[in-house]
Length: 241
Image (cartoon, rainbow, N blue to C red):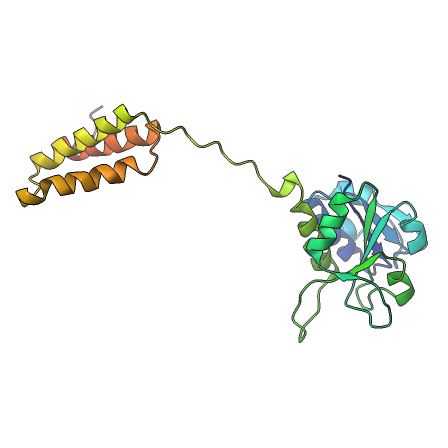
């Protein structure tokens, strides 16, 4: 699976380029391509805003046109609101991520300049428009926000978004559970817990069910037995081992 390139078309502020780099690296993306950045490149304002994502900025490639920036890409997605002057597919982030994951070639996601977005002829170069559900009364996303939304969606299809689960502890042997139940039963008898006598068996069965249906590990059984022991035995004085 080849990670997509993030193509920033005519970005205006170095700070926004840096923030976009930070958003990219958060989700494992490192290929930044810049098309005609307004203030040239490199831009001294980008580094501080990248907050450590320097590798993305150092590897960034600069192109004169969008066509040049995507020349090696088999799949291109234009991040923009739906353009009614174009007849082309409009998909959501999830479908975009699935297409990129299933594509053997290189992919790119285009993001337009902060104020105006992508031009119609630039959107037309893409295979599809990708847009996110957003409040129609307030659809203002800054560049880094747009990048992080799509980068996150792509990352969900990778191991990056799925931290390895901790292996569950094996269940304690039945004999260990019986030892815990017996210890607890003795402590409760000593405290006169089982009352009235006619309910003793039912109460014991309830307690047994609590300890046998939860899949306690040996470590957990030992911890609970230690708690019971501490409650039953006299409190240790300060300074005693």
